[in-house]
Structure formats: structure tokens, C-alpha cells
Image 1 (cartoon, rainbow, N blue to C red):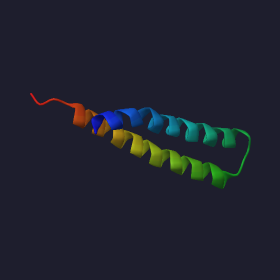
Image 2: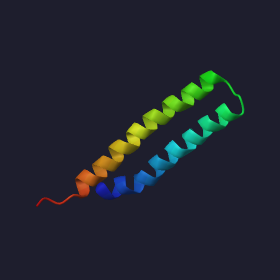
Image 3: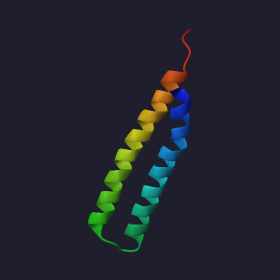
Length: 65
């Protein structure tokens, strides 16, 4: 399970980066503010998911003393 999650981490981080860049691009070109808010909400949700995945990888791959 940890190996699968370890492979998913780059995709989760990449998804956050893509949504962040789309939101910034929309704001810089003067696009719809509701679209910017939607993209930033997606970014927050994807960040939460990415953090959960990273923490699961750290937890599952850890060794007990």
C-alpha cells in the first residue's frame, strides 16, 4: 500500500500545481472572479488530499523503534 501511495504523491502535487497555475493565469488575464474562486477552492481541496497522501506514506513506511 505504501508503494502505491508513494507513486501517487507526484500526481497529487502536480495536480495542485496545475490548478494553482490555472487560477493565477485566470486572475492575471482579468478573468471571471467566480472562476478564480472555484479554482482556488479546488486547490485547497487538492492540497488537503496531497497532505493526507504524504502523511499516509510517512506513516506506512515508518519503522517502530
